[in-house]
Image 1 (cartoon, helix red, strand yellow):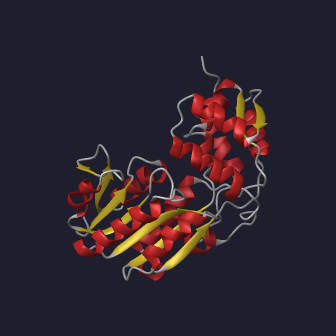
Image 2 (spheres, helix red, strand yellow):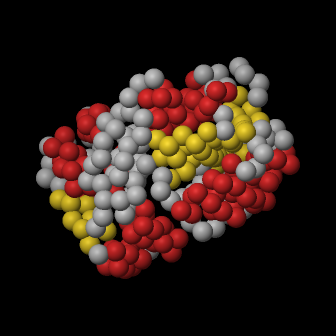
Length: 276
């Protein structure tokens, strides 16, 4: 067992859970941090941070719900300042590709004087199987604001492998690792692939952003999540991310997984089977 403590902030999230599991399997001394963990950590309660981070040398950090939110810059600054006070040496921050707000948070870490990495990822493939889109797919109709561009969706398992490499390899320190999947895809084509693999008829419908957000708020979606949806579909999906990178291959020595691999793997689990 390696003695230095590695913390995973957001250890119950899509990447956090996987990163924590992989570090533990490799014998690292880990500390999973979430609102309900032994060492409780809540982004909305700074009083919880100090005890959670005491004794930590390295941290993988995911910000909930997204670094694009305006308050993320303030929270990351406070987190970095506390980390320096406590003697934390290296932070790996998960960030969103093409998000203006996220880059403000990134710059705080980059200029902190700590060792750092930014893992700047495109949209997750797992948003189709582990997030709000899942309910619509199971019901047979996914409704989203009309996308303006295609997206190089990335498998969360690839994000995990790159993040673990950044946490454990000294040769990667102090780098932005911008990672994408290997292909540009439309949301419509993704839904079609899911429908074919799960042998179901699933419709993909679009709505204006105003109509979509009005319906979401009527269903109780919080204001910050509604703001985030507007930011992502109006600004981030404006074409700025219509390109791929080779970073996954450069870091891991293998190509990034494609959407077909993800869909076949997930369809075999029955995750998109019709809701009863």
